[in-house]
Amino acid sequence: MRILLAEDDSKLGNLIKRMLEKVEVAVDWVTRGDEALECANYSQYDVIVLDWMMPGETGIDVCDHLRKSGYQGAILMLTAKDDISDRVLGLDTGADDYLVKPFEFEELCARLRALARRSTAKLKEDIVQLGDFVLNRSTRSVRFAQTEVQLTSREFQLLDLLVQNRGQVVPREVILDRVWGLEAEISQNNLDAYVRLLRKKINLPEGDVVIQNVRGVGFKLEAHHVC
Image (cartoon, rainbow, N blue to C red; front, side):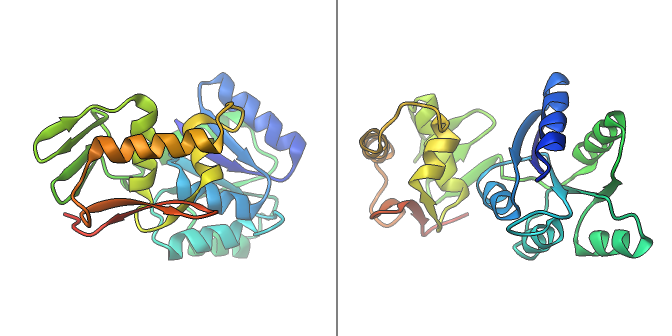
């Protein structure tokens, strides 16, 4: 299971992260609502856990933005507010569940498991077809016109990230973080070289699927024939 934890209390956030990782739950932890929105837009999570009160954007604001943008993944709200009216507001805004502080760690885990089990929404398609181009996440394979395209693991991750966000500019910093990790020693020139090689490997007809370089920002994949 992979979750996004948005909690501005450093002590509590660090404790939750460490405890969940002990039970083999992968955790991305942020302390601001705007950071939570950015992560939710660029990564796949089984559950998003939002603290009600955070700087940048409140948990309620983040939940509202996600639902209005069409996000269908599971969202759990954490809060010290235990009035019925507050619970109703959280659920009406789009949260799937609500946990009042303080809580037992075992209850948090149980609710996360339940949300992950019953969430029927797919956070991203297993198979994406763009004209004659097919990306299969289950088999981590790419085919064009019935011919398999041989990609390394990094190349597949890079292409998958661009396909997930097709039509949108993906900042260079986001690409480096999601594909290599911020601590990795990879330069902007290395990233440019990866993109050039990826373009050469997929070798799609101009206008079908195009990876564009948005100068000074990042890269964008444009697909004009989506099935």
